[in-house]
Length: 61
Image (cartoon, rainbow, N blue to C red; front, top):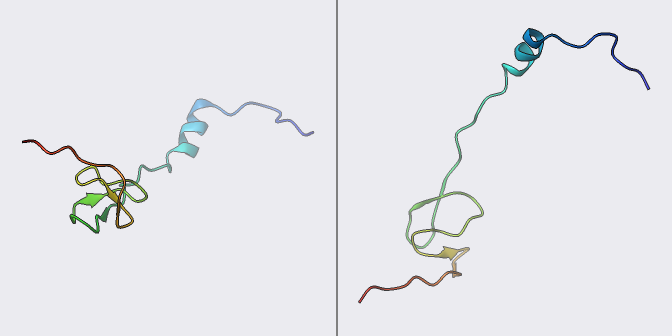
């Protein structure tokens, strides 16, 4: 298998990695309470996912 003749310098490595960007997370809205929710996650506000209650919330009395 072919091997590199010399290792890349740190500067060259940093130049290559300089195009990596952190993207903003995308948010959807909960179909039950209309709060912003990350995709494919249970809503932390109401406990619903895909129109079904998966996590029951405790009510304060």
